[in-house]
Image 1 (spheres, rainbow, N blue to C red):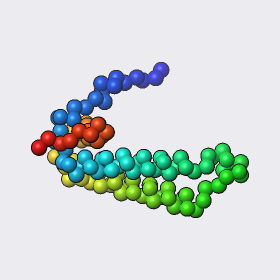
Image 2: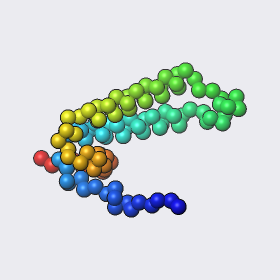
Image 3: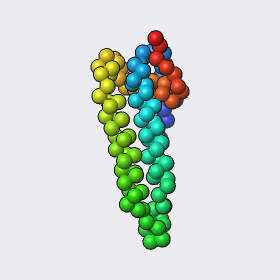
Image 4: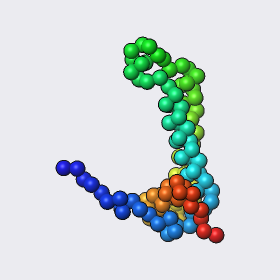
Length: 110
């Protein structure tokens, strides 16, 4: 039997948190870097074609993907180490709200 969770469990009120602008920008940059990783990976030949020997991933493609992944990892580390998390309280809920705020373009209150 599959466990179904209500989406209400994942609806977090962004207004409950006062995110620093730099933290929001880091999260937005992470989303952009993640999209870049997906874009680069999608430009590679399919695994089926590689296995069949009709295509190959070039060294340039490998390097481009490695660079995109390194940038995403760097942003992940900066997000995790941001000092605001020390005062966030419920870090899990705050991270969910930050992700929602970054996706919707919400900005911190002044």
